[in-house]
Every structure is written in C-alpha cells, then in structure tokens.
Image (tube, rainbow, N blue to C red; front, side, top):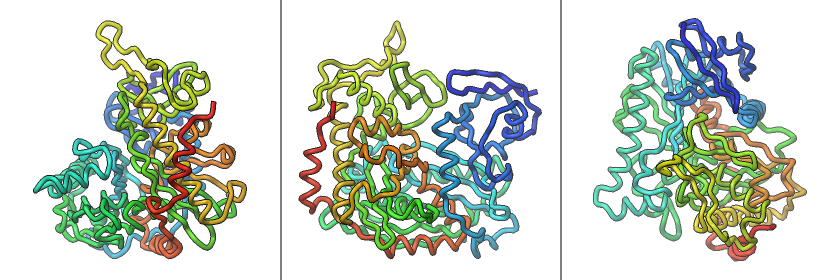
Length: 500
C-alpha cells in the first residue's frame, strides 16, 4: 500500500492509502477536513493539496499510485479557498462551439504572470478541474519585470521571438504533460483561455510591446484576441479556440479585468478596493457606477526580485515569519525569501525597532544562518532590501490614495479591500499594515481571494456567458495614468517612511 507523509505546519503524520483511491478520500477517511464545496466531483478546484515534486493538485481527482509527501493548506490558505468560493461569480456551464471539435473535449485556462504561470486543465464535458499547475515563467531570465523584457525585445534583433517562444514552449510542455497524465490526445484540447498583464499577452502572441514602455503608453491591442491553436503552434487541436482576454490599458491588463469580473456581486461589494500586488501593483476602485484603475511602479520586490535573498513563492521559500521563527513553502529547508515572508520580516523589524522610521537598518538582519559549516543558503536582509520595500509599499499606498481622491471617497466609504493574486494569498494583513503598504482603516475589511486572474480565465473557459461580466467591467472602467498625476508624486514621497 502506498505511504503518504502528511505535513501540516509543525505536525508530521504518515498514513497508508489504497492504490487508486483519490487523495481526498484517503485524507477524509483519516480525519483530515479538506474543503471541497462541490462534494468531490472536481468542479470547484478548492480541495487543493501540495504534492512534493509535483506542485498543487486537486485532491478529489488525484489518484494515489505511489509513496508521496504532501503539505496540507494552513489556516490562512484554507480560509482563502473558502472566501474565494463564496465570492466567485456563478455562470452556467457552456464552453461554446469549440467543445464540438472532439467527442471528449478538454480545455486549458492559463494565467500568465510576470513571474509565475498557472494552468488549469478542465474536462469540457463535466466541467471538472483535472489538474492545476504553477511554474516559474521562463522569461524571468531575461528580466524580472515587464520593462526589462520590453527592453530585451528592443535591444536584441530576435528578442521578441525569443520571449514568445519561451512562453509557447512552457505552455506546450504543460500541454504534453496533461496529455500524458490523462491519456487523452492533443486533439482533444479544443479551447484555451488566457489572462495576464498587457505586456505578457503581447509577448505571447508575438506583437511588439515597445509602445507600452514609451509615452503615451499605447499598446498595440487591448481588445480580446481570438486565435487558433495552429496560429501559435500549440500542442492542441489545430482549430482549438485560443481566447486572449481583453485588457484596459498598458499597465492594467486582462488579469485585472478577469479578476474583477470573477467576483460575485453582493451587498458587501458595492464600493471596494481591488489590489493585485505582484511585479506591478495594479489597483482598482470599484463603485456601482464606475471603476477607477491605475498601475503603480511598485517594482518586483514583492515577487522576490531585487531582494538579495529574494525568490518566487515556490518550494523552499520562507513565506511567513514572526518572533517564533519562519515557515517555508512545502516545509522544505529555506533557500530564500518570497514576498509574503519579506513583508513579515520588515514588519518584525519595525515592531522591534530594529529599523529606523526613515528605513535606516543599522546592521544586516539574519533570518537563517543556513548550513552551519558552509553558510550555504544563508538568508539575510540588508539595507538595499529595506529601500526596495519602502519604494514598493509607498507606490501602492500612494496609488490607493489617488483612486480615492478621483472618486471623492474615503476609507470609511468602502465596504471591502480585496487582495488578489498568488502573492495576495499569503500576505499577512497586519504585517502589510505595519509596513505601511495597506491602510490600517481597512484591517477588518480585507479579504484575500487568491488568484482571481486564474479564476477569471477559468470562468471564461467554462462559459461563454462570462463574456457579459467582462464587458460590464470594460464599460465601467476609467484608467488613470499616475505619471501625469501631481497628487501621486506627493503621496509617494510622503508615504516612504515607516511609522514606529
């Protein structure tokens, strides 16, 4: 019988499983309460479990075959899954005409992030999510942020093709993987929906992104793009529908459109802030009449870039920190610090007065000594790291204040603050308030809804009726260019210090 090693925070347990049984069923029999609102039929994708060496899987449709080590969601992650399910828009299952290309049609929803790619494989007969996978965007070796990658395309004769092929190659690798694990053929993948920021979408379809980086910041396209599998040489049905979701502006992309559209309307969401804080800080203020949105030059600090010990939120990254120590993703030995861990560490320094209000760090702060003999994987926060955090958190807070001024609203007028994106799933709200990244007035009004861009791409894959949600977001949206806004510059400078 396969042996399963279960890690949940500091507790480790080993159980035996029946070969071929679902992972969810095995865990439930052993008394583990795994959130599965659809009853284990695979349609909601919320019963997520981290399998070492494979990544995040949907446990109700993952069948046990070999010995494995898994990590169960911590309380914060489990709470996000519950909130995400409660606040996700409901649309009738209707994948559209492309499902007729195969007797056993499948589809793929993709969130192309600057740092991370997330894939959702869906059975388009039942609507079940077969597998979810997250991988590092292979373009990161050409630059940590969108401007670096745009510069690469401008400075290298074949730069655009190189970056496009990196994304296409990553998608094809996952398509081949999905075909292998499911036993289907590539011709049975008949629909792919894609969300991402505007630059990532240009790079994926092979369109020059340079105008995005130059005033007046006009991208080649923001409208929905409809292609076929053969157009991009994807390993799917040649006539598969490839739907690239629409954007709003150069720095407010389809990830934000899809994310806002994925939120279920309710009385709790009449006036709310929507923050997707990643390599760029994309912000929106949603009211019944209008959506004010902007993008802040937050820099890639919260994605682990430009931080001396920084890394993406993958296995081995320190993702939480407090006076008792740290936790890592996958419960592995620490090899670096991801964005949520970085915020926790800086908050700890502020609370213990180890950093001054102006950001001066008298001496480097050792998070982990690493190997006692070689000092390998020694993790330290230095002065430059603190400066990167100051720049990023100040840009976000200044952007929020500009949106409120444009809408003539104050924090007291808002119902909710929504944290979106993979990074938003792990942020400790109190830590974010302590460093001055989030307003303290919203401490008890904040929700983390996880990767809403991925959720939106998934809804677009499952239902053509989701297009109505997207069109409503586009109709109400008004983009604010912060580089032209005097209030932003002043607020940016005024929010740089820490409050001790």
